[in-house]
Length: 238
Image (cartoon, rainbow, N blue to C red; front, side, top):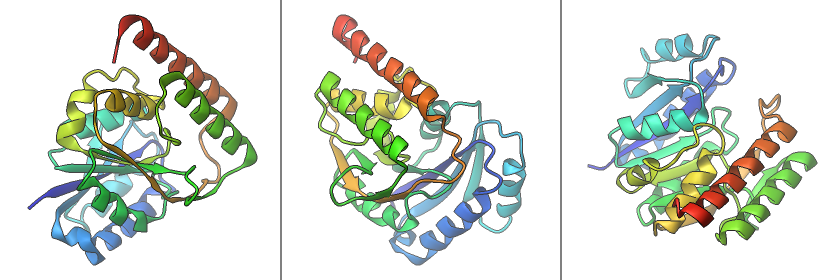
């Protein structure tokens, strides 16, 4: 029987984690995921609130729930999880469930035929509720990425992605970013390594009180993108 791991990266998510776990567990138990050995992992980046204690309490209720604790940095959390969780398929999603849980099924079905599946907020079929500022910077980042690398994808940073573990592991050895740029770097390296990648439409609702600083993070992402571009152009670092 094939196995699938669903990953929720967390950092100080005490307000969202219990709801995310209960909704995900309910969905797993009532849908096609019961045909797989399915485990749910919370990968915590050194939370200073009650996130970890809440997860440990819920472990008493759900025997397929596990927690991994590692250092800060979303990219570091995801790399650590993929390297250490021995499942055939890995799907990760944001703790606030910005993408409704029902999209796990089309994600899983697509992973049977593709090495990587990207949830996309920018496809015509997608329905995304985002502020003007976030939408503007997100689409601008997408355009810049496609111009620099000639990649065909629209959304590089959506927090809803799936991987065939055996195919993504070799890619992760070369991924340098340990934070938010991780997603883009993984997609670009995977594309130039010949992995099959599907971009699937989703629904997306922007979380309230987001931890993302749009201007600061946009500057960081643009800087990281240019650095990767020049590494590739002059050092063939892909």
